[in-house]
Length: 222
Length: 304
Image (cartoon, rainbow over all chains, first blue to last red; front, side, top):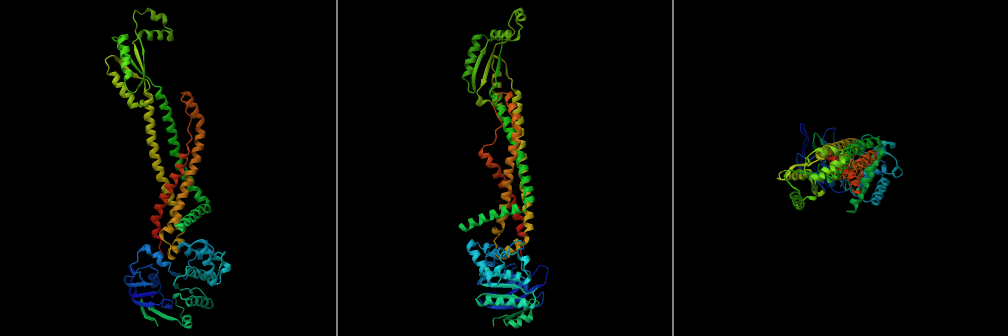
C-alpha cells in the first residue's frame, strides 16, 4: 500500500526532517508511527498525501510512484487516502452531514449516493442522530468521529491519522483507536502517527519509531 | 457529463445563496457595478439621439449656387440639367434673377424701393438638394468644392455649417463615451476581483480542507467564478433599471426638443437585444474579474 525507499526530506533553510527512511505498509495492514515531537512524523504523512515532495528517494502509494507527481494528479491521489487530523479540520459553518459529504461531493458522486454513503459512515462512528447538528455543538471526541466519518466516507483503501487522540482523555482515545481497528478488520490499511505510547503498547500493532528523521525500529513488515 | 452539468447547476445556486447570505456586501458591489455600467450606457444613448436629430436636419439641407451675372436664363437651365445628372443630387431648381427679385419684393415689402433701381441687383441662383444617403459632412464639402470650381458659379453655400460642427461634437462625445466605458469596465473588473479576493480569504479554511480531501483546482475555482458572473450580471440588470429610470426622466424634455425641429424623433428606449446586452457585459466583466482574482490567490492557499 505504502512503500518508502531511501527517502530524504530537507526543508529549505532547515535541517533534514527525514533521513534514509525505508518501509512498507501492506494493503490491509495497520501500523503506528511514533517518535518524539519533531522526529519527522508529520513530514512522513505529508509525503504520503503529496503535500510535500521528497528531496531524494522514492515514495509509492498503491503501486504509483508519487515522488514527482504532477500537481493536477494530486487531487486524485488524495481521494484514495482518508486523512484524520488532530484538530479535526471540520467546516464549522456546515452541518455534520455536509462535512462528511464534502469528499464525496468533491469526487462528483450523485446526490443519492452521497446521502447513502454519508449515512453509512456516520452510522459506523455512531453519530447518525447528529447529522443535522453543527460541529460546535459536539464534544471533542464526537468532532474527531465526524473527522473519521469524513475520511472513510469515500471508502479509501488507506487511512492516515495524525495524532488523532492528541486532545482526548484515555477512555475516548481508546474508543477512537478501536474505531480504526474496526476499519482495519474490513481491509483498510491504517497508519496512525501518535505519541500515546501506553495506548499503542496495549493495542499491540506494529510500531515504527522515528528518531531525528531516521526510522530506528519497525522499518520492515513483521 | 451529466454529473458535471448537475454540479454546475448546484454551484450556480450555491453561489447565489452565498450572495443572499451576505446581502450588504453583495448589494454594495452590485450597486457599484450598476452605476459603472449605467453612466456610459446613458451617455451613449443620449449621443445616439443627438446624432439622429442632427442627421434628420442634414437631410433637409440645401446647397445654394449663386450664378455670375454673365449667365443668362438659357445657360442656367442647361447647367441645372447638367447638375441633375450628377450622382448625389436629388433635385435642382432654377430661380432666375427676375423671379428672385419678385420673391424678394413680395416677402420683404421693399417693393417701391426696388422699383427705383434701374437694374436687378440680385443674381440668379440654383437650389440643390443633396441625396439624403450622401449627405455626410465630408460629401457635402466635396460637392461644394466642385461647384465652387464651376465657371458659372459665383459662390456655393451650404447654410448648415453648424450641423457639421454638431456632428463633430457628437463624434467627440462618442469617443469620450468609449473611453469612459473602457475605464469603467476596468473598474468593474477590479471591484469584482477585490470582492472575490476577500471571499477567497474568508473561505481559506474551506479551500485548504477541500484541497486536502482531493478537490481539483477547477472544483475550488467554480463557486468563485460563478459568484463573479452573478454579481456582474445582477449589476447589469440593476444598470438596466437605472438607465430606464434616467431615460424616462429625460424623455419629456427630449420630446420637446425634437418637437422644435419637427424631427419626429422620440428618445428610443432600448430594444430586447440591448436589454440583454447589459447583463451579458456585466456578467462577462464579473467573470473576468473573478478569474483574475482566483488565478492570483487560489494558488497561495496550499495545505501545509
